[in-house]
Amino acid sequence: MARGKKTGGKDWKPGQSGNPKGWFGYGKDYREAKKLTTAIFNQLGTDLLYAKVEDLQKIIKDPDASMLEKIVAGIIGKAATEQDQIRAAFLLDRILGKPKLNEDQPQIKPVIITTRDGTRVECGMQEKEPE
View 1 (cartoon, rainbow, N blue to C red):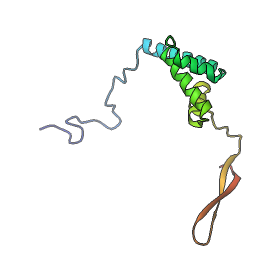
View 2 (view 1 turned 60 degrees about the vertical axis):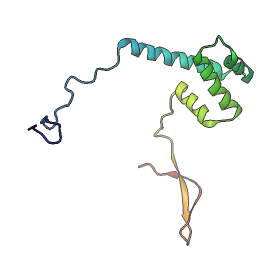
View 3 (view 1 turned 60 degrees about the horizontal axis):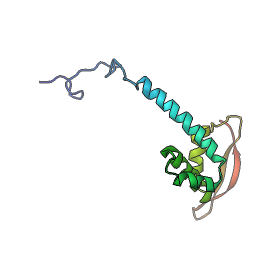
C-alpha cells in the first residue's frame, strides 16, 4: 500500500519543495534570441509608426518583406485607418512599455448617485483620497 493519500504515495514534509532541483529555465540561446526579437520589434515598430498608410500597404504587399514587418505594418495600418485603440495600445505598450501608476498623481473615481428606485447613475469624476 502506498504511503500518503494526497501526494500519490510520497509523504512531503511541510515547506519541502516538490522540485528540489528547481526549474530548468530557458537556454542561453533562447534568451538571447528573445532579447534580439524584442529589440528588432521595438525598432521596427518605432520606424513604422512614422510611416504613411500607403507605405504600410506597400510593405504588406511586398513579397520580399519579412513576416514580422508585414505583421507590424498590418497592426499599425489597421490601428490608424480604423482608429482601433486596442491595436494602438498593444503597440505602444509593447514598444514603450506599459505606463506605471505614479503615486503622486491623484486617483480618479466616478461619482455614483443612487436614485430612490435603486438605480445607480455615474455622474462624473472626483479625486479619490489617497489611502
